[in-house]
Structures are given as structure tokens and as C-alpha cells.
Image (cartoon, rainbow, N blue to C red):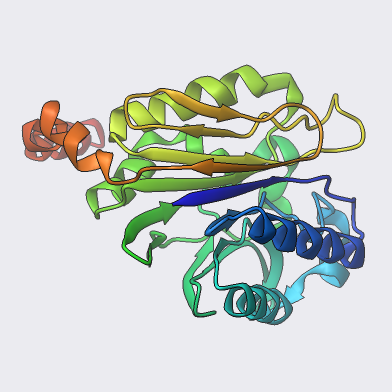
Length: 266
């Protein structure tokens, strides 16, 4: 499957500009042959958390309609990064995924909120696993800081995900952590990791370096530090072969892990 990664500049609090940019790049990705397209985290608002009350997409209505219409028109799957939403009076960092029929197949609120950027002061944490199917691909999705919690990503893999999609606004100062953690998550879960990071006009803040990593931990593509649209042909079928060669899932001892956790809590 040809995967289109949209590493885009996200304008701070300029929702209209960001929607225009996203549509332009989604259409360009389709022209270049993409069958599945991935956007970065909070691409509608950036980290304009102090302004989220006026900027958030109410019930995600605009974003879902936007992604669904484009997916249906272009016949592409879209992992819609994430957007700031307001639902039932609370604010969330929400990831919508739509298939090539325009159907919303994934609706996920970021579970781990990043205190260093005050997310916990403005956002409500989600509590559900994000598993979905795109064509024949069994996949899962998490958002940025979630990546630092290996047990959460393993939960998705245990439910059958062969690819993990990770939209992010990962800061330049810790971009080495980003690259190392993504490879580790791919290796330990024996799955593909498709991670798309944003750009800011001040590159010392956010500098891209999006990545696609295979289940052996091999880096298939790395973005640079400018706006970039990459189309990468990914063979998701090799996941089963990798898991057969090193049977990590068969050799797990979950009863022991559960016991240790229970003892630690006493």
C-alpha cells in the first residue's frame, strides 16, 4: 500500500489556513499515488491551548465532514492526525480515521496528556483503545506523548494491529528521543510504525523528522526539517512472517506480569 505522509507547517491558531493546507496536501498526495494518507497532531489549531475554547471543532463535526468528503471523493484512507475538539463541554485532542468510502472507523482521544506543555490544564484525557481496519490492514493509532508508554501501544498490537500510526507535535529539543522510541515501539511490537510530526516556522520548536519504520526496526523513510510530502510503498503483509520468526507473542507470560503489577500495588 502506498502511504502518503504529510509533514506540514501548522499555523498557530489559524484554523482556516490549516484546513486549506491540509486539503492541498491531501489532494497532492492522491495525485502522487497515495492510497493511505497521514496527517500530524493538532493540525487544525497547533498548541493554541489558551485559545482552545474559541478554536476547538465542536463535536468534531467540521473535521469529520472534511476528512470523509475527501476520502470518499479521492478513494483514499485518511488517518486524520488529530485536532482540537469540544465534546459535551470538554476539550480533547482527537484523532479521526476514515476509510476510502468516507466512513469514520476510528475516533480516539489522546490518553496521556503532556504536562510539560500544560495539556492537562486544558484537555480531558481519553480512555479507549484506538483499533481500526483500513481495507485489509488491521491498525491502531496513538498520539505523540502516548509513544512513551510502551504498554499502551502493546495493548493495540495485542488486539491485532499490524501498523501503529502516530501523529505528533514532537519538539526539536527531544527529536532524538522521538527517533529512538519509534524504532523501539516497532521492534518490540513487531509491526510497522508510521509517525508524522509537524513543522513550525521556528525550527527550534518543531522540525519534522517524520518516520516510517518496519517490524524489524529498519527505517524505511525519514523526513527532513521542511514541509514534505512523502509517498512510501509499504508491504504490510510481512508482519506475520516477522512474528513467526521470533514468536514474541506466543512466548509472553501475561499471568506473571499481572501478578507483579498487583504485588507492586500492595
